[in-house]
Image 1: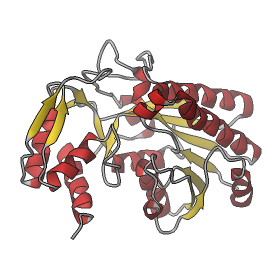
Image 2: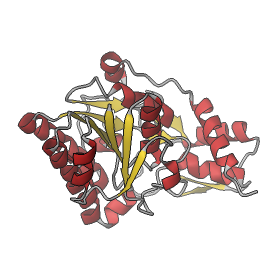
Image 3: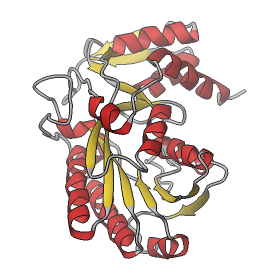
Length: 310
């Protein structure tokens, strides 16, 4: 297949582009390389073409016309909750207007299907766990709002224009190439501190939990989504809760160093627990997470260790 991956120089998108190339697909990556977005030219896999362009740019029409993609995998986004709160206009411009530009261009040039990176953040703090597709969406940040709105636009374009889609509401993704400066990348942040033999900061009591899913498993998911999941939004996680304190203990085991901890007060808006049930994705797509947290951490630690200054 001919596939365009927007945001394909970023953390998640580059792993997906790499999986598509390995599967024999023809891949074009479109990425703005925005300094706050985590996209890096060196992340683009060998065998994929690269276009340095923002998804809001009307100039993407030229590349759709020349390449004639069958699939667009849309992972380009303003992904920072903190930036979205400070600058909701920027967040909406990238995550909504950028999406509409991609969808309009996809319709114009006969794209069959769009795969979309949504977020578990669209649920806010649910009244019950685990989260699944029946959980009401109550987004609590501009970022989460734009991701929920994007799902509605995908439904509209499918109904109005026949453009198929599959959307994935990701839990907390971790793995190689994650930007350690991102506010959501606690594992990457901790790994950097552990490898430097430095202390770490834990907000609240460290017992708050998240559902951590390995990026390599998401690459497999996006391969399955090429042919399955028509018109559906899937909750993607491991159905396991892991506390920040458990992350610390696991990294101590993997690195052989126990980083001193500085406990700080709870941050405003911090959610106590998160757990995402991927049962629907398993039934309909044949996907389930296969990488244990410890194995995923080992791979991530090795990636960062190989890139430490000599």
